[in-house]
Image (cartoon, rainbow, N blue to C red; front, top):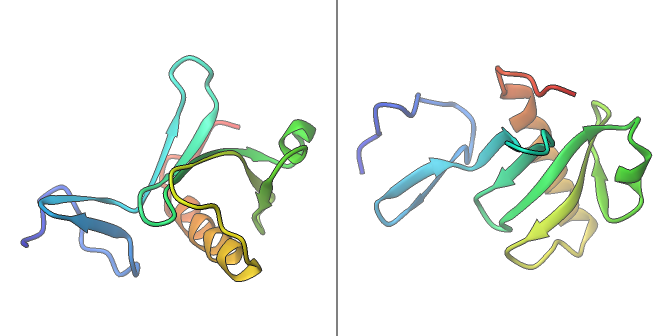
Length: 110
C-alpha cells in the first residue's frame, strides 16, 4: 500500500494503523465541541478514548487513571477492547500516550 499524501513520513514506530484500505494515525488528540474537554483516542489495540488533564483536577484521580511523567493524567476511559490488566500493559499505554502528546504541535488548552 502506498503512503497517502497527507501522512508525513515518520520515524515513530507504530505511529500509523493500517487495516484493509484504511490508514489512520494510531493516536488522535482532540477537543470536545461542547464540553471543551481534551481527549486522546487510541486507534490501535487496545482501543480506547480518554480525557487528558493536568494533575490539578482532583476529580480526575477518583477512578481508574494513568499518570504521565509530565504531570498530565489520562482518565474517564471508554474501552472498546479489554482494559489492560498488568503493569506492563498499563506502562505501554503511558509510554505511547506520552510520546504522542509530546509530538503534538498544537498544544491542548488546559
